Amino acid sequence: MNLKHLTDLNHFLSTTIFDTDPGTEQQTVQAHLKSASEAAKTRLIQQLKEALSQNDFSVEELGTVSNRWFAEETEARQWLRELLGFLESSDVPEKSASTRSPVLDANGAELQEGDSVLTIKDLKVKGGTSDLKRGTLIKKIHLGEDPEVIECRVDGSTLVLKTCFLKKA
Picture: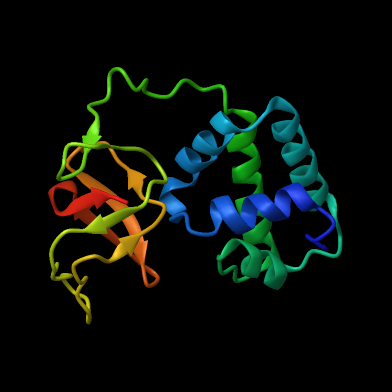
């Protein structure tokens, strides 16, 4: 498989999926599709089906582009089928923003999925070897069910941070 020829799929995997935790892929796909046009969604589904139908499937290439590790080809194909399912069932209604409490930073600014934030004080990371210093920039935050915390990736680790220690960048 040569993902360079499947440009929409390559871009989707290397940008949208790359920093996503495996447990939040469905929400990430839904958030991506909210901003994508119907034509882009159709092209992405087409290219994903084309990738699944190819015989010369490269697990290493797929893993590198999507920041995933696959032990074997069947595992990689199963993961792609799951992504395809998320894309094809994207019309499943999600919780509306009106029923969800807004997520606010320390200054009262509303945070959105994918925003960047700054820490407002030094934070000790439980179980980590290094702490987050004041002013650390954190990109591509993920909002969960709890409006008082966000999820993010810092130096390859997934962290859950309280919003009272963050400000919108």
